[in-house]
Amino acid sequence: MNPPSLFAEILLAADDDVLAAQRRAVAHGVDITRTDAQWECHALMCVSIEHLLTVALAGETYQGHAATLGDPANPLLATQLRRLRDASACSVLLLSRALDAHACDSGREPGAWQDDVVRAACALLAGRGRASIGEVARSAILELSSALLRIARSPMVVPRHLATAIGRMTAIFMLVEELLARAGGREGAPAAPRGWDGLLPPGAWPHLMLALRPNERAELHGVLLGLAPEARGRVVDELLSQLEWMPFGTAMLVALFRAAGPTAAEQGRY
Image (tube, rainbow, N blue to C red; front, side, top):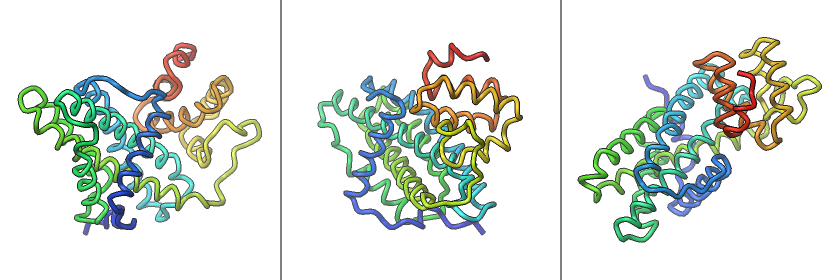
């Protein structure tokens, strides 16, 4: 029997709660990407694909680990939750800007399809079906693919697909916010040794102990010392995510490029 959906564990949100969550996601996406994306619709949709794929992959990993560990507030899951929050927020930002750009191109007011966004999010938050985070993210990717296929010849149906994708990603963002709030009072996480103070996000050290060899941890320590404080947590989260399918050197290069910018990546020794 399939496990119950995580979405069924949070209270059904009102329309205003969904819209407020969408605004929080957009604001967080701006913080992560360091830009308030304002480009043409097709480009924004294409750029969003990477973040949607990240949500799908990280969501499946999180739910697998949560089922094994049993407690969604376990500190070992904190990195994956932050990864999900960041990627879902970036997706909402880019897709929302794509929808606004499409509205401008078609002579409509920005926000014209917010009701569709709310309906898509509330359908998930009502606990209908047993969808997992990964399944919801993949369904949003399918909606985005449909929008891309129709933008040239059937532009009038594009907003419905985009609004549905935004609603589903907003629901994921709301779920992750709830899970992070539950994990906020966690205790007992293994402490990082002296010298790592201020370099790592909460709960990251156990992951690093398992994922990296001692020489790789030493290399990471030197890299983090050279980064701005606000970029360190993003780099660590990105690194741990990339280590699932690539070696340390490549994962570090990708993490620096995506979380700290091209300049940091060019200065790395990878």
